[in-house]
Amino acid sequence: MGPADIEYYNSLIGQGYTQEQALFYTRQYYPDFVNPQQTQPLAPNVAPVQHTTIQAYPQTNQFAQPGMIYYQTSPKRSRISRNVWIGIGIAGFAVIVAFVLLIAVLFASLGEIFELEETPEFGFRHDVDAGLYEDLGANRFPFTIDKDYPDFSSTVNIYGEDNGGQYLSGSGVIISEKWVLTAAHVVDELVASETGVYLGVDVGSGHFDAAYPVSNIYIHPGWEGDSEIMESGVDIALIKLSESIDTEIASVAIWDNTSTTDSLQIGSIIFTAGYGAYDLGYSECSDFCLDDGDGEYTQRRAWSNVLDRIVSDLVPPHEYNGDHHFHGGFIVYDFDSPSEKHNSLAAGNTSTLQQGSYAYAGSGNSDASPLSMEGTSVQGDSGGPTYIYLNGQWTVIGLTAHGSLTANYGDVAFNTLVSSHTDWICTFDSQVAPILGCNR
Image (cartoon, rainbow, N blue to C red; front, side, top):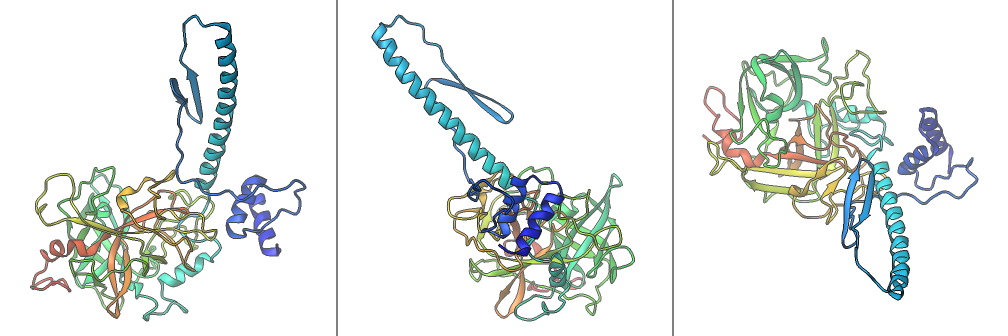
């Protein structure tokens, strides 16, 4: 125990957390922390509960209200001898004892779940300086462009107006001088003539390096904008710009046009970038909102993770133009914690309380240890690129699609697999507006 862990604990108390909450959060970063002011022995660290199964006794009726679970025994109406009643009395007492123990274990388990799911982190490790994620997204030293770090200047901000007059924002990636890839749900309601693509480390008003008007928006034909569960991996769209970008300001990213996943290796280091919403009142950032000094957080950020899953050849459950070969796919990773207790993609895990079921990520395993710049996507990062070092060059293999709203430890991030959509992307390639990577 040292000054750092005590200071962190006291800061949580100062923010209004209870001693139990402050102790729990402090132990996420300092597992051996002991509160010097506490005279009673401390409870052991709470282990994450991945699944909770509630099993009723035979011939009981189970009904529940929020936060409570009750069991009601079905009535028995028959004449029984005194000896039998004594036996039933003993058995009944045993059942009651077992029932009480079951309820105690159940509520203890539920308490652990809720405690774990209410942890305050949002998108990035909070034992790491938040500014380092901005430095990574800006390729500032020590994250300069080389084989260790991609050029994030190809990541762009998309900002536009829908038919109802509402302004929406997301991220994307430049794949040719007139073309930007993004997620379908970022642009499916935007009016092209009222939408722009913004370049720069800071895309706030008066800070962006350049802005380009949009001429057309093309949505994958398999995308359904009203779908509640985006499990088909077709959350992808193309933006055609009215004029070519200045490649002195931003780079053009290489994208994976192989139409196969053979070259991708599970366990590889990946990087993702975007313009996530970290403003208080505009996101779920809770205690870890960010402020860049101009009233609206508009910084490009980046983070690293490990490629945990590759899912390909997904077919949406409805008919659409090109449904015989325009299929979907995902690359998937999870947000591991410093305590190594939030390994959502470990073998056998298929759901968490904050995210629900993510069984469509497929089977596999995952390392619980976080990377030094481990992170996950938040609202506003949608459509941003995921890069991997492939054949000697950084290559875009995914686009941020969806994850949990809370984006805390244990979040499972789904990213549209770009190589699944090579054929669809290249249908828009032309001599007037070529798409690099397509073979005409």
